[in-house]
Each structure stands twice: as C-alpha cells, then as structure tokens.
Length: 344
Image 1 (spheres, rainbow, N blue to C red):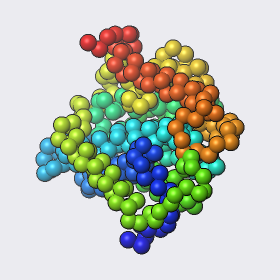
Image 2 (image 1 turned 60 degrees about the vertical axis):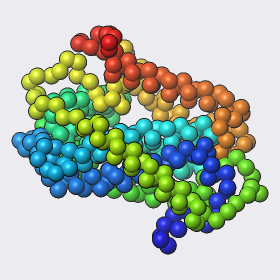
Image 3 (image 1 turned 45 degrees about the vertical axis):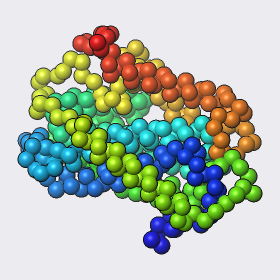
Image 4 (image 1 turned 30 degrees about the horizontal axis):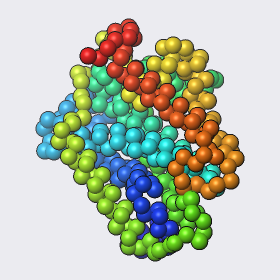
C-alpha cells in the first residue's frame, strides 16, 4: 500500500476527481495493460513460436484447454480496447491542452501510443492463421514506404525479405520481451512525471481547492479499473478472438488488408504512395511532437476547447476525422482488387 501511495502526489486538486476532467481514460489503459500481462503470461505457457506448430497450439488453447478461449478473447479484446482508449486519452490531453508545461510527459505519452501500435502489430502474426499472415505481409510493405529507413524496417520486422520462420520468432521475441521492457520503462517515467508535476493538469490556479489523494483517489481509480475489467469480461462472452484457416503463403486473400489500425494508411497508399505512405504520416507525427511548441497560448492546461487553441484544435480534429474516414473506407468499403464496394 505504501508503494501505491508513492505513485500519486500527496495532495490533488478537487476538480481532477470529476469524471469529465479525465474520463478515466488513463486508468482504463492501465487496467487493459494489467489484463494483457496476466492473460499474455497464461497464453505463453502453451504457445510455441514455430511455423509448424503455432497454429495448432492456438487451436489447442481455444478448443481443448478449460477457459482457454476466454483467456485468448480477453487478451484480444484488451489489446483492441487499449488501442481505442489510448487514442482517446491522447485526444483528451490534446483538446484540454494538458501538455502545457509538460512537454517531456507528452513525448512519453506519444511513445506509449507508439508501443501500443507496435505491440498489437507484433502480436497479430502469432496465431499464424491466414488473416494475420497476410495482414502482417501488407503491414510490413506499408513500412517500406518510409523514406530511407523504410526497407530496413521491413527487413527487420520480417527477418528477411519475406515472411518465414524468422518472422514468427522475431515477432514473438519483440512481443513478449523487448516491447514489454519498453512498456515498463515508459510507464514508470510517465507516472513519475505526473507525480512530479503535482498530479493531473488543471485549468485552475495554484490556489485551487486541494485534498489528500488517499484514500479517495485510490478508490476512484480502483472503481474505474474494476469497471473496465468487468466490461471486458462481459464482452469476452459475446466476442470471440478470431482465428481463420491455417496460413497459406500460396493463397493470398483478395483483398489482403493490413490490421484495422493500419488499414487507413493502406487506403491512403492506394491513392498515392508518396502522399499516403510518407507525407501524411510524417506530417501528423511532426505535428504531434511539436504541438506544445506551436501552442503559443499562455493559459495552463486542463480545460476543454480553449478559444486560444482553436486553430490547433481544428487541425488536430481534421487529422482525427480524416484518419477515421480512411480506416472506415479501407476496412468496410474495399472489396476485390481494392475496388470500392458497399458493405451491405
């Protein structure tokens, strides 16, 4: 308990406890990570990262082991909810200007969002089924569009020029060892910077009403965490982690699509490899890294949609809408040969 107390500042502003201040998104993300760790360790006891047996081991987990299908579904759902909640958390921080005076922590947050994408990507291949095999193939091809380092990134991800045994082993090593190490480091730095800054950003000045963080803050965070875990557990009874047929390198699906969180880039690349694969992703990345520098407003962070940040908020909002649109079109409105089709 003493360790948990050190994770939070001793005093917090009363307003930060209001649900609309943070929407509980940070705790939702942390709860998903804890569940991912627990279910991931469980799955690790039975999974074997070799081409000849990987698919059979996943099938064994789902059909033979007691509660194995439930554990895998929880892992799958927590990973996807983490993606969505992490994106919403980043959006909340941006629209409230909570990066003001906390540039380093904003960078840590962007690093955690990047790790979320990387962890989902490396875990996507592990079932070694037809869907994941070709989705990773498309995703690695998209990586090659990055200037200068793109082809090297692709070779690193695949362990060569094409998907093979080295690809599966490399994805497994990244997913269960290298990336979790980075997760622990960045989470520790992220929480440390929040504590050092005196808690969450708030629009009110230093004279704002304060109270002891223990026990009310811990109870609020525990409640959000339990609600998140309960939601995922209920969801797992209705949504099963997908598993298609065994991976077949000789029978590519038409169309072969990247994982849903990268299919927006695939949609943009289908219009222009230069614009969609290089210019837009780099521009969005640079904007996110530099937005605290571009924000010249003198107001502290913590308040939604401040007028002084109207232009930055509009640009960020356009980025969000455009990327959601490309994901929707690429995921639901593209058929054979990447031709436009209606999903109904």
